[in-house]
Length: 322
Image 1: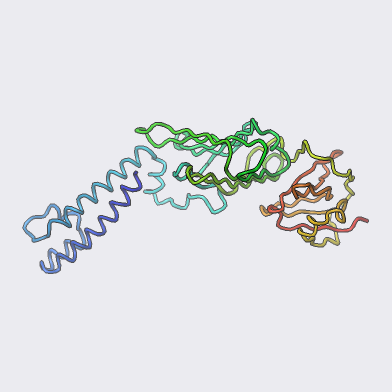
Image 2 (image 1 turned 120 degrees about the vertical axis):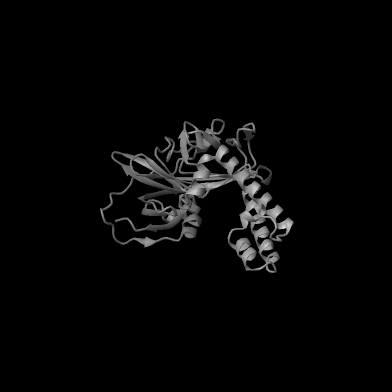
């Protein structure tokens, strides 16, 4: 509503200004100069021959613009400050998480895992939540394994529930919506640093909900399930081979060849470069039935398995064992 009032006021002001200038061409240089340089005072001027209609339209435009600015200041002061301070560079980059939530712009500034729930929240001054989207895996814990979660409409099995909440202003009641299935969801995670994790999200709901979300976020705390596997057939046990600090003889491996004939490469040292720019080096352990690449990484005396969806792999290299 605020945006419509402001935009409508600006458009109407431009039209009335141009109309007033053209109508003043025959009134002499003084009235024409006043209409050109200070048009907002012409509604107060009498006896100069200015036409009535463009001046009435200009007054309505100023009222619409002022009402829109007042509503924006009252309901969303942080956006008012951003708009009129000129700090437009604060808008998110192409890689940052952004989208729409029930038809409203959605720019989550808080992203974190709360147990088995993934929370996206957009907050205002005073940490007041304006809009939030929570992906609840309470009824679908089997999805929390590996490094990726992919769901498409029509997929079988348990689905996480989406809980959407939004706040439109003091005069409107908060909204709440729950969606149990029928949407598209892709989440990819990769460890970053000691405790952080890189996460890429793509979420699309049916058109009736006018909700989508996409982009990249760095999580301060990685989820506990990241990299773990459960309920999958155990691939052939392959002990990670000790690798030098700077391996030689790396050769790029065709991803399609690996997916179609994994037996010829299982057990060989491999390193994976993800689309997010992360690099992982270990031993190629298996390719699962759903075409995910399993890489075994040594961590001290133990071994951690990471799974990579083919769409998240930018490059994969391998070298013969010695």
